[in-house]
Image (cartoon, rainbow, N blue to C red):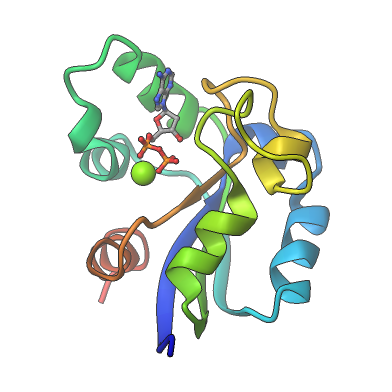
Length: 136
Ligand code: DAT
Ligand code: MG
């Protein structure tokens, strides 16, 4: 039985620029999850570095940081039963070429460099990311 938990998600700068915020939020609400906090803001370079430290050695890392800090995002705390896994399944695969139709990335993203949405991959990372992006 899944527990009620919190996850952290961000609608990325490409989707904010392309006016997809409303449609993405609708999907999250329709799934039964609850948006507890939401804020339009810029990600700082320090926050982006910390959030993506597991990718520091990748060739695409500089582009990833430039992309994530290049325009406003919508930061969200989302709660519900199994919220971490549920958001990951709503989002679809990291690479939009592999993301199923009906998922957010499958329907709105074109390539992995700008894949529309972030979601925490574990309860532990969700707690860390909520602190990182919303403070205590
Ligand atoms: P996810 O965002 O699904 O948790 P991740 O944590 O492995 O995936 O990677 C974080 C972000 O880094 C991802 O959303 C987009 C970017 N990224 C990952 N792999 C990439 C690749 N091969 N080329 C370009 N960008 C990539
Ligand atoms: Mg990740």
